Amino acid sequence: MTLEQFALNLNEFDKETAGNKIDYFVYFLTVINGVDGVKSKDIEVCFTELKTTKYSNISQYLSLNSKKTKNKPAKFYYHKGLYHLERTKKAEIDKKINAPRIIAPTNNYFPLELFNNTRGYLVTVATQAAGCYDNSLFDACSVMTRKLLEILIIEAFERFKIEAKIKNPQGNFFFLSELIDTFKSETSWNVGRNAKKSLPNLKKIGDLSAHNRRYIARQTDIDNIREDLRIVLEELIHIIDYPNWK
Image 1: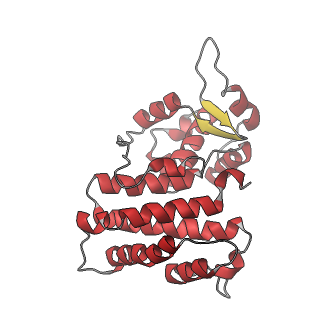
Image 2 (image 1 turned 45 degrees about the vertical axis):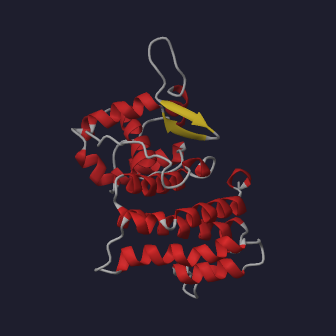
Image 3 (image 1 turned 180 degrees about the vertical axis):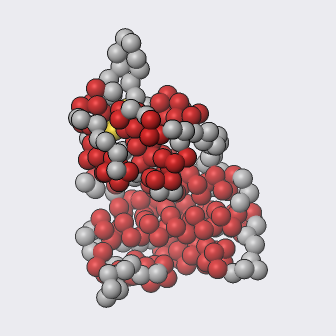
């Protein structure tokens, strides 16, 4: 969804105050787009994109509304230089825009705590994969798992500043098969035997669900890769070491 589409779906968005628009922009960026928090410059871009009058001091608005007062609760939560919506404010906007109720995924597919202290977009993809498993959407689960692996492999190379090794002459990242081969042979890290063996199997399931029109993934197919997936995810996240990746 684009920002323009989001604004059009809101009831009388153009009549909102500039301050209220900031609330919606933070929602759009962090909830709809899944970015890991925002800065004032991100909000300024939203005002510019919609060609609507900007709030006079966005930075001050975010700062003041991240503090609870006697008269009103805080709208934002400030953490590590980024602003997020407070849970109560997010729930308020969810209700206004009739956002679908999201049922929290379980750890039945893989332990979601693996993604603690990683990145917001990774948590989003991981929870979607887990949610698909919980709701028996096994083809969707396979595809989201494939996406998760692709992101993590790319970020391993970016973490070590060697992403050029996984790009073609046009500057585009390799397809997953080449990513896996290059990851397994890279000497900047040591990949365990089990992870090396598991990666192609995980890719195969994702490819079948994404590209084979007669293939329908079943729970047994996904259950057969759960142990392999746990091993690979943990190894990739350990290699990347998100808490120390600035």
